[in-house]
Structure formats: structure tokens, C-alpha cells
Length: 114
Length: 113
Image (cartoon, rainbow over all chains, first blue to last red; front, side, top):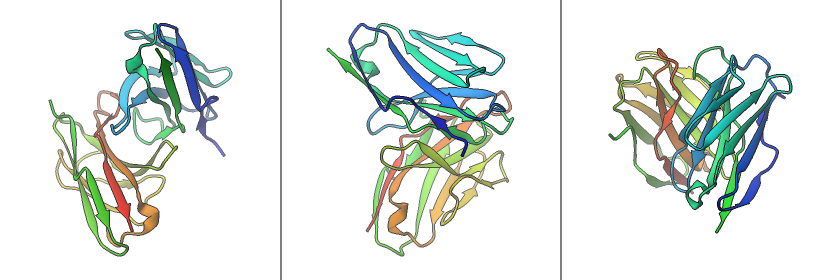
């Protein structure tokens, strides 16, 4: 069935390196994508979003890339810090509305080595 | 700035007991949501309320009911709790009028024995 998935369940990076977390989606009608960060014992925290009319969007130390041709989404974190250690989820909206019915992937755990 | 507040933070129930999880947001958002998150998984939508006075089923609504009490508050009720409903429950809200993303509370950890 259709799903939002992640290629790597766990990603370990050295502090100061760049991190790339990937996500595949299967519904070409999805038009809105969000990355969330979830720390232990906390709710998901919004990081960055992108709409299907864009290929790239940058925030503070984060960049999201959207490749609609291959239905692929990535989150790049520059100069990864220990505070970036968390589980990262991508989510897509399939309903045509701005943020109803988000479908979440299963998450990637990012571990930052000192 | 409280954002989305959920109560209680932890609860243990016996099978068959009933329970209402409370959620309130202070961001004047029109839409609110309830999700569950099971170990090692992403969030699954239980119910949502696009606006005050409306509620709709999400992906996993069976065994739950919701009430959009007013614009600020959205409650989730388990009428007869089952062990399969042991999970972490998250409430979220969003301003869909202005196409803004969902913001989440810190969850209610519910165990059903």
C-alpha cells in the first residue's frame, strides 16, 4: 500500500559533520511535506516544511530537498550537534488541504558521536 | 507561551475502565488532532477536528470518541479501555486557514493492564 518510509532506521554521525536523513513517499498527489524532531519523552517538534511547488527550502542549519520525480525527500543538518540527537519523522499530506491528515513515516534515529 | 497542553501526562488503567484525555491549545488554531504512537513507529491519526463543531475519523478511530468542546479544547475518550490501547497519545493543533503546520503537545502515556 501507499506509505511514507525511511531508508535508514538509525544514523550515527560525528559531531560537526553534516547529517542527511532520507524519506520516500509513494503518493504523487501529496503536496505538502514536513520534518519533525522528537526527543525522548517529548512531542514532535516542527523543523521545516516544503510544498510541492518547491525543490529546496532552507532554515537555520537545516535544508529540505524535494525530488518529485523519484518521490524522495531529505533533511540535511549542517554541523550536527549533540542536541540534534533525536528521532526524525517525515510526514506528508495527501488530502489536498494544507495540514489535515498527515501521514507519518516510522522515523530515523540520529545519534551524534562526540 | 504554553502551546498545546495535555493532561494527564501518565495514566494506568485496568481493562474495561473509561478515561478522558484532555487537550487545550492557546494559539487560536482552528484545527485539532489526536494521534497515537506505538513503540518504534510513527504517529497514527485517531480523530481530527477541522474546526469548532466538527470532528472526523482518522486512520485508527475504533475504540475512541472525541469532543471538540470549544475552539481551545479537544478531548479523547476511551469508553472501555483495552490492552491494545496502551500507547502514547499526542494532541496537536494547527492554523489551516493560513496553511501552517501542526504543533504537538508532549503526550499522555497510557498503560492498560
